[in-house]
Image (cartoon, rainbow, N blue to C red; front, side, top):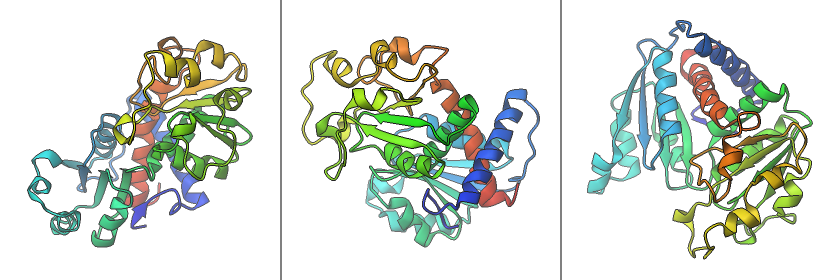
Length: 298
């Protein structure tokens, strides 16, 4: 596999990642010394966009598996001097890493890197296109809490138009048997969107509610919403959550805009919110992905 994406993964590989991710999560919680299948391997991190959760969890995942991690600070790299992405790929490839993790603001940038690199490339988010490991960790989070994915109703609400998280989950979760409902403000739905996009209808009866932030940095025209207006019309409040299934859980890929797409009381509800669990499962899933791509079979 040259590039890790949802489309490149077979059903068996997805199952392996989720099962192995669950095992790594248990080992991490028990603070057991991990096996080191990546001992002597080198992982490059190349992030052209800001990141906390993804960058840190990939680094922690690789180090727990015994790999060495090298993170290139792009703001101090030759990209600032005009070096092209392809030339950066050729330069890094000459250093012979065992795996490269890339986040980039352009769609398909990881695929361009994969065509040049001799090692596996993991897409850590490209523009508005895809974020495969986020979808995988979301799936493991749901399964860890609810015991299954098949048959669940998953509402993904917010800025669907610009969300690579929504796109990857909309590809992955139906393959695992879930019904995915996408909803958001009309201005933040894709041009080819099918359905009403009504947030209240999507949340009603849902087993999982995943909220997405408004990616204002990608908007051509600001929404012009007054403080509190977005939350009242489209955000997840306690009142909207009450219309979901009685055991419904709340998710958010982060970073959150509290008081915009999600009320703080809902985000911090220890009984319903799985947001901290998503972060925890992120490390475990990325350990499983690295082991699949670099360390051989589990």
